[in-house]
Image (tube, rainbow, N blue to C red; front, side):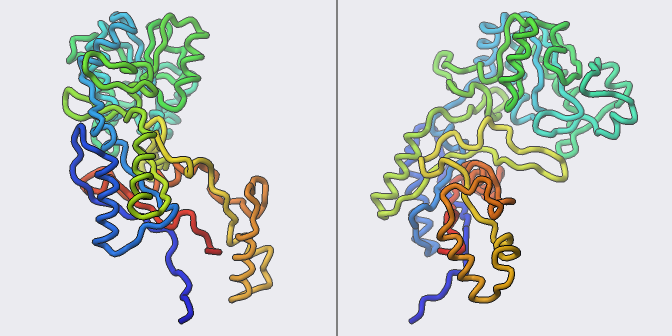
Length: 399
């Protein structure tokens, strides 16, 4: 019987797992969950399938939690416990609010400098139209809270309904800490107010620290410099500190998972032993994509993937099929066109950088692309699929 052509390319499957608790053997649980899903749902594991798991279950299994008091103690020790300039935080109840509570608990006064019209990941304080109407230049103008209110009034977040200016100010004062709020976009504009600075930006933090130190700040730390070592029996993250953390309870924060390369290698080994197949494995957090409605960039984690097997290093090396069809083989059609394109793919160079036939393909890290796919597949709510199996990702038209 003649073998039929495949009609399916990449498939992303959410895999249901037990609720993970501290101390669980995650390598065994993840591997077993994938194998049981394959048996029950009737699919096979193949070479170069990708098994991905959320950073949340990894951190939970590690018990990588800290308290507000842990944050407060670290802030007081590292920033002196007096006036602290807290600049460029994102507007998030889940990501930053509880960290701010700990920061406030470790200081006497906080000068909170918010970027505007939106934060680093796109949460909007005011619209560009509002800035235009008010004649405000966000690149140069520093606004006091009073000036901000007189120009723009109260502005609630489109999706959460929270006025983060009031919310953050009240939160600071609830901790017995004095609060002053200003609005500016140049890091050194905090220096007339404070010389002990905590910069809370994520992807621009290295530049911000450099600018502040060069401008004369006495102490400059980032969120990645807090909770880099345990306080008592607390969790910690030596690489990212508070970056990538999430609210767990009203008094506890889950940190980004610590070094977990051994975990992905263990899962890869277990699957090989059970099936004879060589799979790739990764841990993923936020996907790297932007919401067109709210203009929010999803990536509040410091990286999409903190750990992955070596087969996921690099970027895609793909030809653009429509370019080949419209240019190189514009006079072909049907089976002849199909065979010509398949042959081009089989003979493509290992590195297509600069090749016109690859223009328009996505020049991003494999882990960022696959992690984004997995984040969308697993969701952030009650789907109950913290593990995602991606199959056929490395296939192409010639396979």
